[in-house]
Image (tube, rainbow, N blue to C red):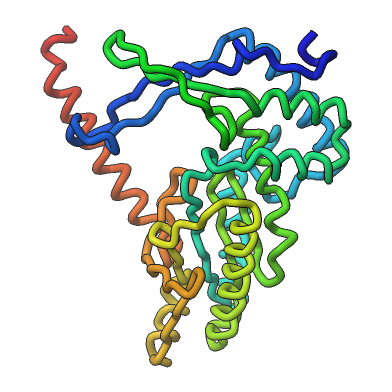
Length: 311
């Protein structure tokens, strides 16, 4: 009935939000993660729509090939394998790889509904479906519950619904056109994780830096046009060369690398966590293994502490 009439019932658009403490001081609101719960019946309807949407975009070849989230046959593993293979191929050709790890501020929460609906129209989604999505996105509200106490409802005018089935898919479609605006870099997208990468011979790094900066400027312009915002404090870059090429670069000297977003220089890092794996500038995964060992050591210590009570 909802799909036939192009109307998403108002009762299905009310979210109950519960703050979940992450870590740190409990009186600091920044140490809480909001958990949004929607009516179960709304998710049943959304699952049906989600299948239809993904079938339409997949069958018509509309999805960017290196967008790896929320798609069959794609995962964090496939995304990391593709990225790692490309870096290793570059090393074999005496090329270094420059990667920019782009962070969008509150990416899922800032989605503009009108921009999203316009993109669906450009993808030639049927008018009847766009009418339904308009109803689905608008008129939403949420309230907060803490210790049995309930706040008043407030409207939600931006973003995709947290805790929904369709939210992640709609975000995927929102950022799907990013690669069309970039000319020099390879782009890997996994939900709100966007990574730009470019490569060149180790002796020609300045030209590669110029290319990355051009594409970061273009990406920043895209974010403005699409009413999103790049967080330049959390956006980082890393030069991956391997031990052999790193030695040649150091011997050459005078290698000043300035990567910028909107005229703001971003921070260079020697290692970066990407899709659950810590990548370092030599691609040897030592830092990732060290972090795993430290984490396992803590867990083993906890098991040892409680083991007498498990017998």
